[in-house]
Length: 280
Image 1 (cartoon, helix red, strand yellow):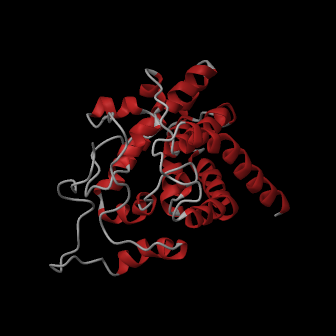
Image 2 (cartoon, rainbow, N blue to C red; image 1 turned 90 degrees about the horizontal axis):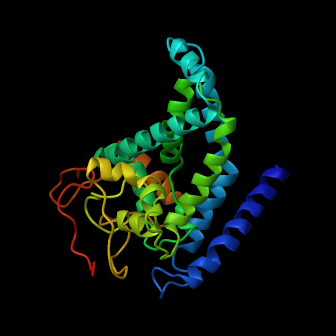
């Protein structure tokens, strides 16, 4: 437990040292304070993710890997194992990007999946800490989908460790309050302005589902790079609890007692036209 606490504190310190200067020097929204509203809620999500949910995700991934080790794909795994390691890593990353894109898009279109994913989109201010606002079941399923190709192909996870660490840091970067255009690199690795647009307060998100691999959005016609100053509103159009425990329990309650709109019908997962917002 002591090591877990130390690792959590060290991770927070390193992320803060990396992103606070960037957010101060290159702000996407210049008026946003360091300790902005709901900062404490996002800190609770950070601590929960590192101290509780993260270790459970690791255990779940280990169990899934063991479950999929035997099976009918032995012939495929044998062929993959004969490939150079760099090619195995590229295959695992591209397939993971494809799977995460599809899963993320489903989370915006299927009502019961949206209930969990909405926790992440409830953030009305984005920075590196807000990246950790995520329901544990949403995070678990995303990690399972992301790692599934490597498990099925029998690609060892050790060579992917650096990729995983990089993607984790990049995930914090695209949520950070930073405007730092990456040029052509932004097409491969994602950029904050792309993901900030994905968090715009609209009834149905239509763009930039790939998070860390914008080329997937380009392939499937959902790519959009906004221009000009970021002035669009962030968050949800629907009422949502603001506290940590309320957000954890809200999707579970909605599965039992679906939220009703004013006409008495359960709303679809973000259906309808985008809500008017200042996007100039």
